[in-house]
Length: 280
Ligand code: PDD
Image (cartoon, rainbow, N blue to C red; front, side):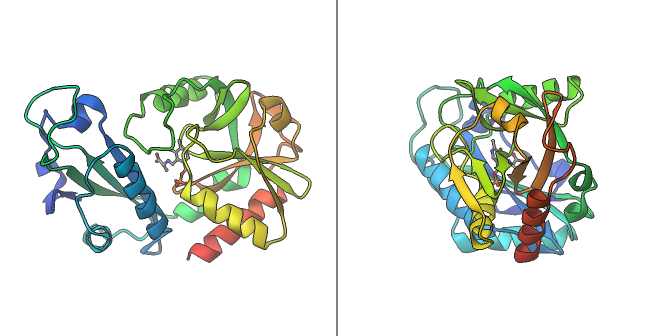
């Protein structure tokens, strides 16, 4: 695999970052994941808008132009012969040469790393036909989940707990209400209404979320942006999640209780179809 590091394209075993990089020592960095379907980048501009917002919230200077990010994504997709898969992009505050809590001087050069993951048949994931099961866990993350930082230890722990409990993913709950999945936004469906948590510092502002809500409104579905409880979700007709890598994925069980009929429902199926059609 060819990996991008600070402007160079290198074989992955030669792609190196300093041990003093703030991303390594302090999780001081942000990332984006862009899907590739049929060689095409999905929702690329949206991801770049959010990347710039994440960088600006952390006062990390944006190291590349929009054109340079796009060119590097395209180069990596081509060099690695990716038809279906994803491009991972990470920008950290860089290597100040030592460890210190204070941010280093503004002339510290951010570290930019990009790599691809090939996922043949990504859009035809068999799980989309059977749906995911999720379990609830307390949301113990920090208070700025709208910034897409590489600080992913708690979501990773939650994923492990979900697996240990025989589920596919965890829905995180704060003050009795669902925030989001470990790496996706959470939704329930009641009749013709789709409910998903409103945007705030409590959740990541999903790029797929924005597109799916737009398509839902265009298809005359009602959208309510508000928080919901696990009990309400268990009594819903359907549930699903969205993310750049899972697109729209039905959720058929929550903490062992079937959602609706316990099978993949028509709204999630339709939104997945619309999202994939419109993206391709
Ligand atoms: N995760 N919420 C969280 C906590 C996420 O990590 C993600 C994305 C989302 C969905 O955002 P989007 O639709 O823009 O992908 C919501 C990526 C895919 C990841 O960490 O791999």
